[in-house]
Structure formats: C-alpha cells, structure tokens
Image (cartoon, rainbow, N blue to C red; front, top):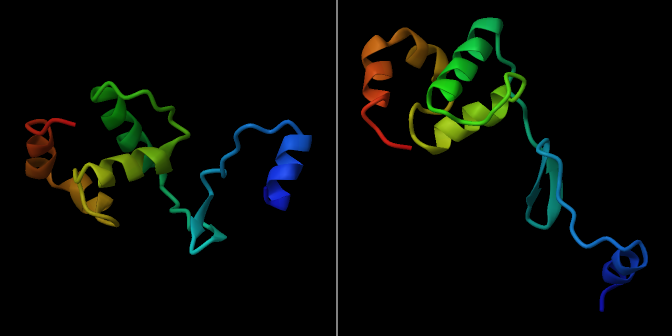
Length: 97
C-alpha cells in the first residue's frame, strides 16, 4: 500500500475528485484556464441548454460551453460567430445530442 492510501484509509476517505477548475496532466495537477463570458453569452448558453432540456444552472456557463464544444455544436472559441449565424443555430436543432 502506498503512503497516500494509508492517509486516505486513516481519514476514512473513499472517493475524492478535483474541482472543475483543476485537472491532471502528466501526473500533475494543473489549473484549467477559465473563459470569461459576457452577459449576452451567459444568457445565450443557458437558454440553449434549457432548450435542449439539459440540467444546468445559469452560473455553469463554462460547463455548458464545454458540453456543447464536446458535442461539436460549435467550435472552440467560436461562440460569438455561432451566436450571430442564424443558419448554424438552425442546423443545431437537426442534430441529436
């Protein structure tokens, strides 16, 4: 057993995970760069998530953004272009999540 395992066993920790602001990279914990959204982007992301029936809160803008990027609904750092392109927004509804 590793030393870490002894500590976890002593403290009765069964599971732990990193805050969403951090991630593992090559066995090290690194801070994830956060993206700042303006008020329009926050409301757009939240309304889009609720339209798809997703269970996010308005304060979860980064999680919503990452979810839609992972689903390939829009490209990374192209949110403002997606917001202004009505054809792209229309095409999203034809896709299934």
